Structures are given as structure tokens and as C-alpha cells.
Image 1 (tube, one colour):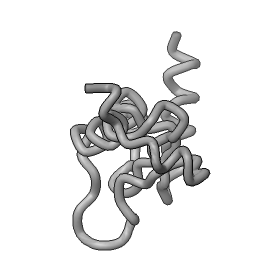
Image 2: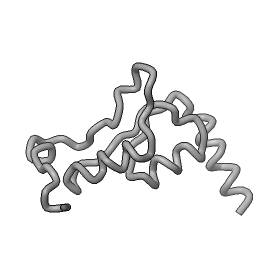
Image 3: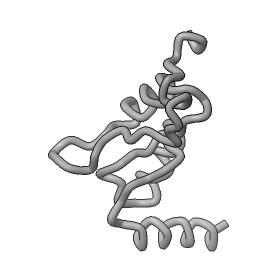
Amino acid sequence: LASARPSFLGKAGADFVSAMSGFGVAAPSPADVELFRESVSDGVSVKAVGAIATCDDAETMIAAGAARLGTEHVDAILSGFSSVRKAS
């Protein structure tokens, strides 16, 4: 069904879509991010926002298809990536 994906976002000049606004009680699940990734054309990236507090959370959302992350926990995430790199 890849050919059925909406291309209007790319044609309208959108660079990305946000899976959530970051406000409210619900945060996107990896399945939500996957659905957004499958629903937009290849030229439009997906941003996951909310409940991304650790290196593992960031990696999970990236694996689900997010190209951008919205988080208030940048220091903790970067420290986690740095610790992983030092351990390898």
C-alpha cells in the first residue's frame, strides 16, 4: 500500500509531521510513530514528542521511524548515548 500513502504533505512543503503535540496526557507509542511513518511520503519525516526521557526511549522512537525527537530530557539522553559509546 506504499503507493496509497498521502503525498499532499510533501507537495504542500511539509518537512515533517509531529506524532503528538507534546501537550496533554498521552504520548505517542512506537506503534503510533510507525503508523505516521507509514502514512506519509518518504520526503516527510516524523517527529515523536513526549515521554522520551532516556537513551532507550530515544532509540525506540528512532527505530519506529522518528527522524526528530521533541523532549525536555536532552542531557539525560545524550549522557545515555555517551555511556553506551564509552562501554563499547
